[in-house]
Image (cartoon, rainbow, N blue to C red; front, side, top):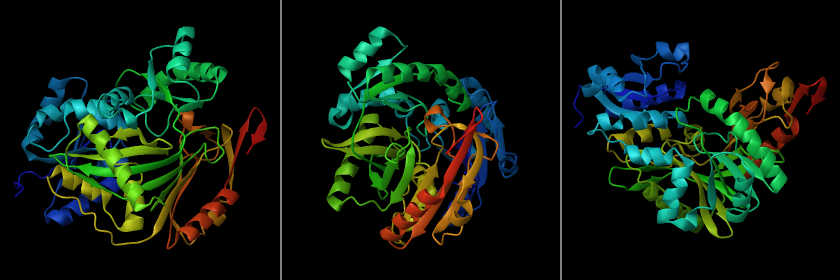
Amino acid sequence: MIPEQKNIVLFIGSLNNDHLETVKELEKFLNRKLKIGLITTLKKKINSEIEKKLDIFLRCDMERGRIIEETLRPYHDNILLITAKYEFSIELLARLVSYFPYLRLPTKRSLKIANDKLEMRKAFTRYYPKITPKYIYVKKYSESILGEIKDKVGFPCVIKPTNLSTSKLIVTCYYQEELENNLKEVFRRVNSLYKKADVEVEPKIIVEQFMEGQMYTIDAFVNSLGKIYYTPVVEVKTGKDAGYDDFFMYTQITPSILSKTEELVAQDTVARAIHAVGLRSSAVHCELMKTSKGFQVIELAARCGGFREELLDNSFGLKHGLNDFLIHLGKKPILKITKNKHTVLIKFWPHKKGKLIGIKGLNKAKQLNSLVKFRQGIKIGEYAGLSKHGHAYVVAFTLATQTRSELLADIRRLEKWIIIETKRNGQSKK
């Protein structure tokens, strides 16, 4: 029985309208009224319309533990659960978990590891080395570090910041000159991108062995005793697969075409990653690569995956955000499948960076019967850059159909229709 005075759902860092709607689902599940709270940093911008819908809105210096504790003290005994929905929010969550020993939350140590790709790789290497590629920590650009990367990691390799999400500054390198140029570029951009993404830790860079194969993601929920509940697999096609000189999630499709046996092996890999990091009482987003050597972990995060609520609801009727709340309340997530559709999220970036001057094919795309949701990340006249340089997608579509063949057909239609036009130095690029 949950005490009546515990009625605050506290979000960390930021939230959106979908998260607000999920609180209504929790109210229906618990049959009681709840309050929505948000605690964030002094400088974080919060949408004014979102702010109006909050019952409690707190700002403080979240680098100072005493200030965090004092800010939360008036609400401490009324907080029902605490959740972080974004990558940058995980670091903030790690700073306050020690003040709530009786709420179901991950440990500070596990959050720190899950939010840092270098510490994550170290944990995987200690416990289950087969699930992780070779890697090296790069403190700064130098001729000697290039030699170490060549000897310890080899080519092709991937440059990654350890604390950025959505493929920002992730660059694949196939030969030494490409590694030199890309490493210099990453170090030139990394500080500004960490600042832009509100990441309040020192930037770090790793270079790891390129994993060749098919990418998949699995979201899961791990309870306070380490028991794991898995959601269906999402199949990913990257920007590199689609012909971009960029690495991002181009299409995310569910259900995947993995066999049941392969799905169980993938789940076992996720379990090993979760237990290596030591996560508990948390949603988990895990990215995997199915290689010739088996499944390896690209990365793991202590949060729900982006757009997973939309994908899993449209395909299976699963309420992903509600399940995230339930795991923090010590309740079993609801994973009964009530739908059987095929869903995709497809995102388009420009092939060439520059001022966005046109998007062809939008009118036809919006008429598709399978269209669930359309998003536009960049407006005409704004700068449209590459994902690897930290820029947002231009347009994105969520589609849902009864069969996979219908879904693939509509994906193909979008690929032929959507043409993003940019202009740079007086010349147009498509």
